[in-house]
Length: 148
Image (cartoon, rainbow, N blue to C red; front, side):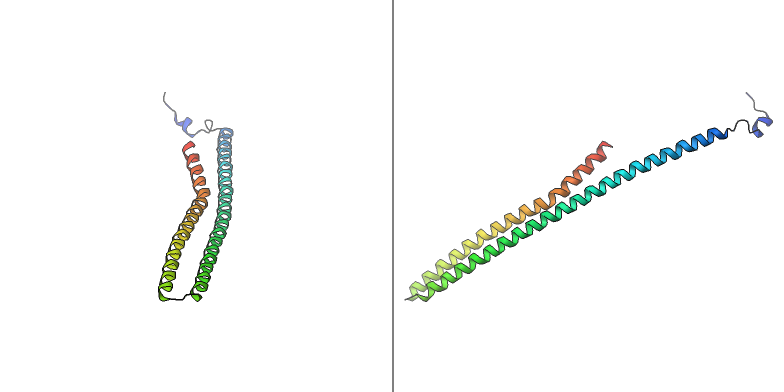
């Protein structure tokens, strides 16, 4: 079919209502997508806030626990040292002094190893608990991306 020159310059093929309708549909679709994206971002921000709050509460509780363990270790070390000093006051010979000192150093070394293990375990537990909310949030986000 051949076009005539009159057809090219006539505006009968142009329908303004179709143009307006198409533009309106495009604008509504863009607005809907923007609302959806905003909703997702708002939800993600709320989740991130909850994760940070949970992490901070866990870290605070864990640091209190570590502090209490450190105080307990200091207290037991002080008690052991005071008991040793009292025992030293009753020493009657060099042999007794050497025996007492050797026993004290052995007890002190064993206690230090036990305290170090307890502190290490408490720190490991704290690290796991502090990182747990972040891990869970990251897994949730990754699963949402995979689902999308």
